[in-house]
Image (cartoon, rainbow, N blue to C red; front, side, top):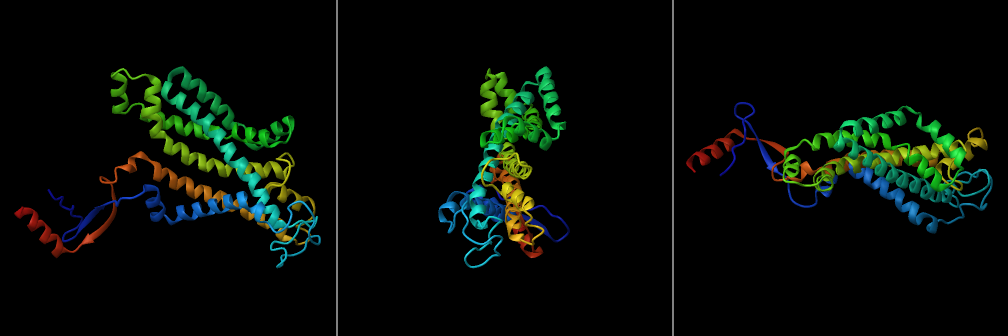
Length: 323
């Protein structure tokens, strides 16, 4: 039986066309140019972080030019106060910053997702206790506590990852908890409980798949926060030892690059941090749409609309009446 389009105004109607087949993620990327832009930005910097140091023309630690040499064909982004190629430092520093960002976001996802899932599903006293702990960490200034903890335990890659990850889980926990409290009251969850399904089975087969898209999207956004926090810690002198985007900014600030007009020493790492943050934000918004289980019923969802001409609408109505 053919479905008749609903009338909007006299003489016109909207025609609903179901979504086409294919990968839903690719479809979201095609329909949202901003998501594609974010994906390209993130992939580009990941590529530079992985293969950039091997493809670099100059060393990222040894002097290969004059002090604060401007950009040229030999040094595309100039050199810093030690005559080190800025482009080589940018590519090697991106590896450190992205490792911290992805690893810290993973820690925040595990801790925050576990606490939010437990609090939302258990409810009662467990929910109250876990949320009060979350609220306590939520009101503490993250950057200040990160500086104190990083200073006490010493600057190292593992310490910085743990410090940032264990202080960025609060938002994830609250978002996941709210979603779990909604999912656990749905009919299919109650039906599974009435049929004797255990708590672990309900959580991993019915609740977690529904909150996973939100958790993944929030984790991608957390990567941006983690990279920003790592850069802030490095700028304040308590970050990861070695080369990173934050260390490059710190050296440019401490070694008078700004006063000497050597913009190439601090603009590239600042732009890289900003672009990665923007890319993660755009990707986070797109991933939530692409992985949301409610969007998988493509044959029921209406994606595009177009107006039908009155004559075509009259012919379709007459054909349906004749059938």
